[in-house]
Length: 122
Image (tube, rainbow, N blue to C red; front, top):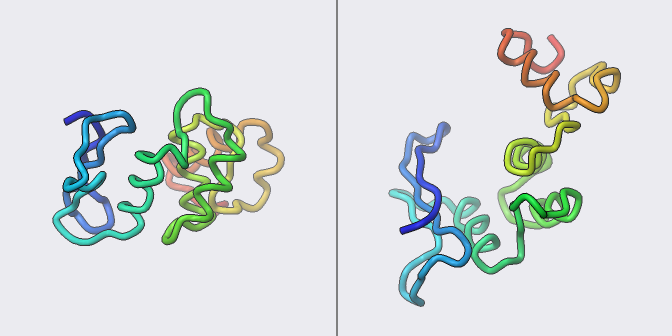
């Protein structure tokens, strides 16, 4: 099966999601986990249906608007997806005080501060 596989950091549960265009049947879900995860299932379904695009040519603003309409996806999660999946260099998912001075490279600055042990403007 083509797609994404990994472990959820928050729950430690294994998950698998098929990529858009992969062979699926009406009986197999787009995303399966060892436990029910509605947000992940909704995200995978939106990707599989083509409602949400996270490929290199995707419009970042449109993708963020679509993400925010999905149940279980809030502004912080949408911003992190925009940063990591769409490669947007100017996103501050945490509302870090003073982050405006790092424009247009806020994503990198915030990530650098996290790695240095100073997350969220501490």
